[in-house]
Amino acid sequence: MSRLYLSHQNRIKKIVNITIICGFIILSRYFYIQIINAQDFSNKILKKTKYTQKIQGERGKIYDRNGVLLAGNITKVDLWVNTIKEYDTDKITTFFYKYFDLDSLSTIKKLNNQKKSYLPFKKSIIPENLEDLIQNVSKIKGLYIDKYNQRFYPYENICSQLIGYANHQGIGKSGIELEFNQLLTGFETNEIFEKNVNSKLINRDKRNFNFNLNGNNIYLTIDIELQNFLYEALRKGQYNSSAKSANGVIINPSNGEVLAMAGTPSYDPNNFSSYDIENYKNNVISQQYEPGSTIKVISIIDALNILDRTMYIDCEDGEYNIPNTSRTITDHEPYKELTIDEILIHSSNIGIVKISSLLGKEKTYESLRRFGLGNETGIELPGEEKGKLRNLKSWSKTTHSTVSFGQELSITNIQLSMIYASIANNGYLLKPKIVKKINSINNFIEFNEVQVIRKVMSSNNSKNIINILEKAVIDGTGQNAIIDGYNIAGKTGTAEKFIDGKYSKKDFISSFASIFPSSNPQYVCVVSVDSPEYNKHWGNITAAPIVREIFVEIINNNFLIKNDQPI
Image 1: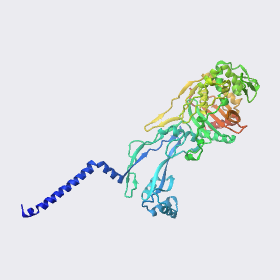
Image 2 (image 1 turned 135 degrees about the horizontal axis):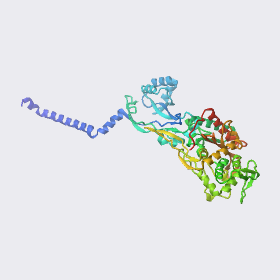
Image 3 (image 1 turned 90 degrees about the vertical axis):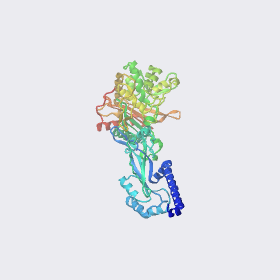
Image 4 (image 1 turned 180 degrees about the horizontal axis):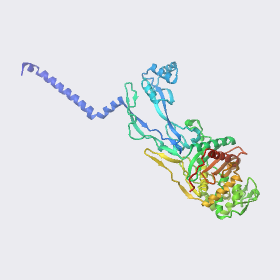
């Protein structure tokens, strides 16, 4: 060993030892970072350079039967500044002046006077070129953009009570939007954004996944043109009669499909918060009312099975006291003797009470139940009421008589429409359908099956009742529904409203239930008008003209096509 090495040996050993120790410390730290605590440090780095955001697919769309959009989504943006952090005043003022014609001095004043982490400048903007707007905003320090989808309803009031609405959080709150909220709601995933040097978020992975996040699209059975005919006729009819409200439904009797369903007054779901909650209600399925004379067809159907149609029934010249009670029944016009057919044609309360008495109360009750009274139809809409039909044991001495002409029971128009659909389709009570098909992620699911609840009358009785109802329009109470050259079968109803424990003499529900054309039934239409002006309260005066207007539109717009034959 050299003298130099020996003289510096201790110093060299110290340097080597220090090097080894430092290396060990570095290697230990490296091992700790890379192996032991790798995930923690990785997360910290990602927080600095990456941003993960939960992304939800678009809400599914709602279409009519022909693919016309009824409820969709529209992209909106909010523009805002974080004035607590650093921002570029000149570029921000120039941007808002260029794109939105905002005064630069006002923009500067707002920026300087309000120190907030979130200072909105423009909200709910529908940009013409979204990508261009996002790109320009990303170049401006301190300016931020939030993008979101909002529900859009192109037909506004026309079908709002049926479609319903989704709130600002994209949750269905009424109608189809509520009933099928789970199917319509989009799926969720995480989307990764990259931060630039200014901490701006850059969409690095634009939905880089292999499945569709969007919710299912739903195709309804309704036709938006028929829906418009119905809505406009109801709106005019309500206005002309100064009524509280009006509602109606159009059914395809051969398969139970709802072709139109509307009510007035309505609301615009694009601005739902501006309306009273009562306007959201779909009265076709939710308004229970005493139907009056439209329900008389049930007793007549039963009478055709056991009574001679040519026999005469004494209608007491318009006034009749129910035996063993103090209740007096009257007719709107006095009649002496009428046949079974004529009792329905002229809507004699006394005649139908006597027919019901001949049938017996057990048969009357069983028949009302058979046609669905007191039970929901099962239509796939929220808020359906089942109506009211008291148990036979709780009937009073007068109930048997009064239910036969539509008192002491309640019904909805969807129930009434299915009763008349059974008359039109050779006697089958069907479950109403509102959904035609659903477009799931992978395929279409179609709902073509006709759902028969039960057979409620013979084909022969169906044809006989249609013939009687034709005469009720031509010679009886429904003459304001007549259309030259076309056969319509129908029955009016004028029912006193039950208010404060008694029947009102000034408030009525006026209705008209119809089958068109009666020679080859394609449409069943039921309309009711709540509290029309007195002297306009008769079903023939208020409701029948509404239905006539709808059928005229159907004729003029070539909607009378060869339909499926009745069941």
